[in-house]
Image 1 (cartoon, rainbow, N blue to C red):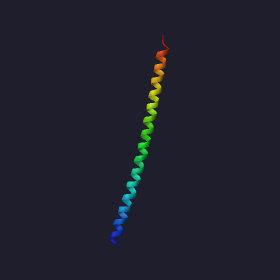
Image 2 (spheres, one colour):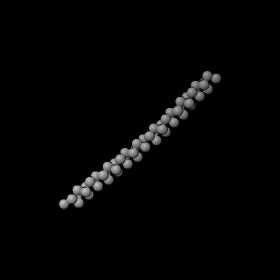
Image 3 (spheres, one colour):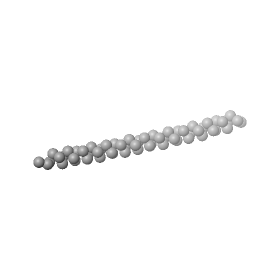
Image 4 (cartoon, rainbow, N blue to C red):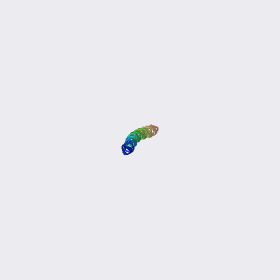
Length: 57
């Protein structure tokens, strides 16, 4: 009977670990998307600055 208790606890720990890894993957993907947006915004700002400098006589 004790082995079923141990297996149950192991199962709960395994499910919890799986759930945490899923959350970590989601957070990593959000971070990647945020950095990509920031990089795109920075590049757009740089291009705008370059165009503004080119138009000056």
